[in-house]
Image (cartoon, rainbow, N blue to C red):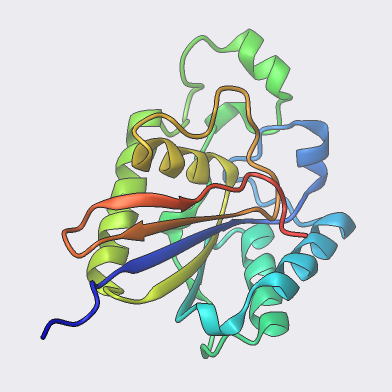
Length: 197
């Protein structure tokens, strides 16, 4: 008699809103804090997250993500001692373009700005994170708080370029869920670009 197939689950929650999100500024690894709306989004999302659904809670070290994760920890009651902070979950660096409006960035830079993390490097980092979750949390359910470009890249990678649709934004405080089967193949089990509400 064989047991149920082993599935590893990864939830990626985007941090709450910041002032730079409202202004459509590139944040990258600049540590921009949550604003009042972002704090409320984090609390609302946390109230929708069931503690029993998750075995581990991770976060990017940037305050907008870590503060979101700490609110989730406190409000949801996820039974973990603390948030695991991992730099692999950092936002993509946009180098000298950080702080620019998106429109300025598109107009000024045809390639990656000086000091930016390339899309190829970001993809490798996302894959390394998927590999580590599949290896270190096999059969468990991991909730991680990260950033828009990181989550977008994971959706693109796992869906073979079908998600997210062209032009669709990944909203603050949205939760997308991925699953890894016993053979190590990842799939998107929940695509939800809108905030948890």
